[in-house]
Image (cartoon, rainbow, N blue to C red; front, side, top):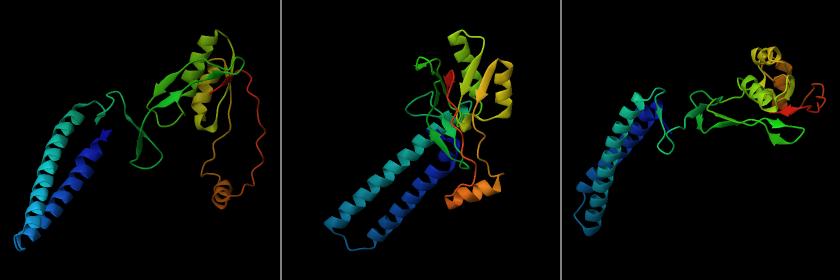
Length: 201
């Protein structure tokens, strides 16, 4: 995956740094006494510089393609792949987020969806609704992990006749909980396991 930031900043800077380093080595080699070893080294440096110049040209052509793309991303291996945002600033993971709700009665995947969303917060209502339609039921009990927690998404499920069970997320707003995690301790009440009734995402 090549992002705008990588093509604009990092790769060209790295290549330019390498070219400068090779030119410095080339210049140092020119001040030494001629020898077969020196001639071989000089030839290798010329080849490296030529390859780096070709790479710069290739990156420039990719930059044009990337800037023409709607989201300013291109993938050299899979045209549909996109970088998913992660929790780190300016970071991302090249991959997909696969959603697959399971009917807990029959242990079968009831629906599926592949997305580039870096988290699951917006995935609960669409997946629960797809599952409800697949199972042809008027009511559905959905159990999910805390990564799906969003008050608006839970409300959307409730309005669609879907009862949601999931734990509240651990946030930095609970200072004592944050401190406990940092110390590797927990003073919170133990969670009571809830047995899924119908659906697990």
